[in-house]
Image (cartoon, rainbow, N blue to C red; front, side, top):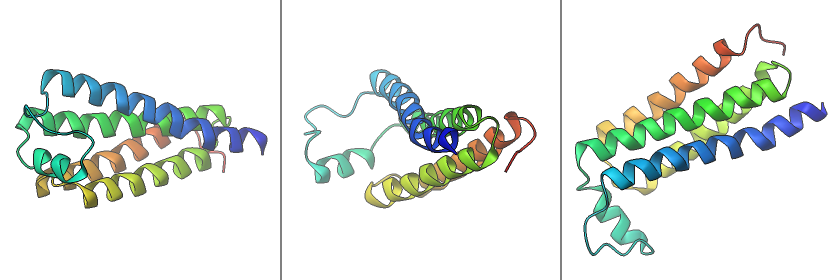
Length: 133
């Protein structure tokens, strides 16, 4: 039980670190438009509406890899218990839905991001070996 609790705590942290690293790399390659105040939510929403295609693909890739790393590591920390990865995947899915609801990404990016998190959840579940619920 302790390993399961530890996995549900560390899994999202690991996933968020990976998500942040990939998103940071994408933001380095495709920086936000000049003059955008990154502390103003309205300015961020306006900037995400005009991001180039590559930046939007980078955001989807960041969420895919972050959710995959978080769920997979949670499964491993918990001793290949699928429940840990499924909890972490559910957290990432909820956070992704909230992020997409509060940003101005185009519809295809929003749908792609949610699908990417679901793909990561299934991949982490299968990559962790036989599930031990």
